[in-house]
Image 1: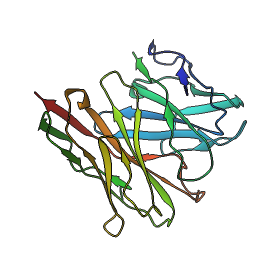
Image 2: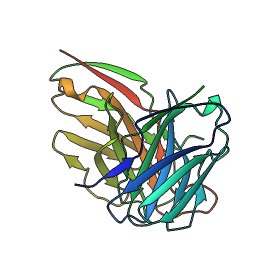
Image 3: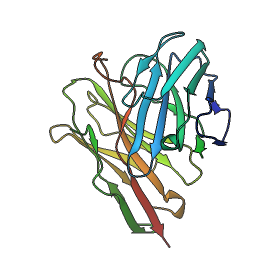
Length: 114
Length: 119
């Protein structure tokens, strides 16, 4: 069974902390994505990666960075967490460069910044 | 302009009735994929159905079918014989085939429709 696993289901962090959200996939997928989901806004793409050590900005990259040192692992980093980064974060992976491949999602991490 | 528009923020439907969830999209890419995902209250995103822009037939997967009208840029999800377990958020999404370099190559999502099935 295909699997995308996010390291935490729930996280509470303080303003100004450095936060790491980890995502691991076991499907040997080239592409990995980080989204945030907010009520009324749907899912918005933060960053994606199409290969090891490669990264591209999505629609809302400000305040975030990413790391992909191994094919199966894609990390989202909040350098200095702020309250407006309280959200649900979803990691996804897919194979192939083109439009006909579905993305598989992790279970989500609900991050609260206080 | 929004790439994916879901005009129904919420819907109430009686159990066993058919449901149509609306989705319109905007792209100039001739090759693209359209997806529907279900998100129950537990939070995970569940892939339901896919339609490719060059597919001649409408996609079907069990009780789910996609009413694809390319000229109208419409990709509505139809759920036949709805069940209580169908209550969830439903997201329409699109992935364009060719990365333009000026934007993101991930899935672009609509804002979702909250479907509630009533007994």
